[in-house]
Image 1: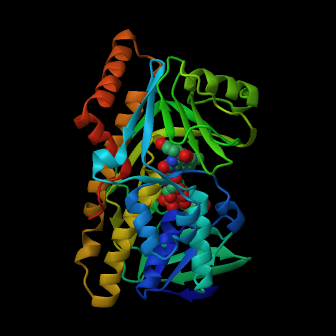
Image 2 (image 1 turned 90 degrees about the vertical axis):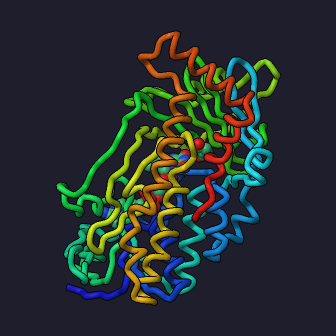
Length: 394
Ligand code: FAS
Ligand code: PHB
C-alpha cells in the first residue's frame, strides 16, 4: 500500500475540484486531486457554456482568466422567442451593468489543469476504486488504485467534487442526508456544430413543437439544444432531423436564418432538480454537482460549483491558517442559500419555456401570459436578468 499525505484530499477534476485546488494553493493550503477519468477526457467533455459575472471574477482572482478574457464572448443580453417574434432582455440596463461571458466549461477545465500542473499541483488521473473513509475523524482518508498500486491518501479534510454520479455523497449516513428532487418529463438533445453563429446572443425559444436553445462557443462554433422525450434514443436523430427541428422552433418571420454545419458532437442530457442537505458531514464537504443539480435552462450548474468552492476555499483557509472552524461549520448553510435561489430560478425558467406532455390549453395560455409579462414589465425582466447574470457573491 502506497501512503500519501496532504491537507485537503479532493475527489474529482471537474470545475469544482480543480478550482478549489487552485484557490487553496493561492492561500498556501496543500491538496491532491484524484480523478477516475483521463486528462484528455475531462478536457474534452462538452457541457456548460455560460459564466456569470461572479464566476468570471473568481476565475480572474484565481489567476486563470487570461484566455477566458481573450477568447470568451461577453454578452449583454439574451432573447426570449415566442409567438413568432423575439424579445431581448438587456442585462446591463436591468442589473446596473452586469453581463455574462460565454466560454465553454471544457476551456475552464483546460485553463485550471494547466495552472495546477504549472505550479506542480498534484492531479492523479485515471485512478480507480476510489473510496472515502473515517470522515467523522480528524484524519479522513481516500483510498484508490493508481497504476496497479493500492494507495491511501490521508488528509485533514476531503472535498467531494465528484459530480452527480460520484461516490462521496453516499459516504454521508443515510439517516443524516435529506434529498430533495424533481424529475422533468423531457431531456435536452445538444449538438456542437461547425457553423458560424448568425445571432450575437443566446436565443431561448418557446414553441408548440418544444423548447429550443441557440447558443455558441466561438465565431466558428454554434451550440444548440432541442427539448426531446426523457428516454429519447439519439440514434433516431440523424443530423438532418435535428437541423429540421431547430429551424422549425428557432426561426421566425423576421427572416433570420440558422446556419447549418457539420455536427461535431451530439448527446442527450436528462433534466432534474436535485439538492442534498447538509452538504457536509464530519471532515467531508460536498461541492458542485455532488451536492446539487439544476436543469440547464438557467445556465447555473457550473456557476453554482464555482460559488460553492469559493466558500469552501475561504473556510478551509481559515481552518488551516487561523485554526478557525466557524466558516467550515457554516459551509453547508452558507452555500444552500445560493443553491436554492438557483434551483428556483432554473425550475422557473424550465417551467416557463418547455412544453410539458400533460399540459392543456389553459397551461399554454399561462406560459404565454408569463412570457409576455416578462418581456413587457421592467420589474419582471429585471428579476430574470439579475438571476441570470448571477446575484452578487457575498
Ligand atoms: P463534474 O461532474 O463536472 O466533475 C466531477 C468530476 O469527478 C468528473 O471529472 C468525474 O470524472 C469525476 N469523478 C466522478 N466520480 C469519481 C470517482 N468515483 N472517483 C474519482 N473521480 C470521479 N451546466 C450548465 O450550466 N449548462 C449546460 O449546458 C450544462 N450541460 C450539461 C451536460 C451534461 C451531460 C452534464 C452531466 C452536465 C451539464 N451541466 C450544464 C452541468 C455541469 O456543467 C455541471 O454543473 C458542472 O460540471 C459541475 O461541475 P462539478 O461539480 O465539478 O462536477
Ligand atoms: C450552453 O451554451 O451550453 C448553454 C447556454 C445556456 C444554457 C444552457 C447551456 O441555459
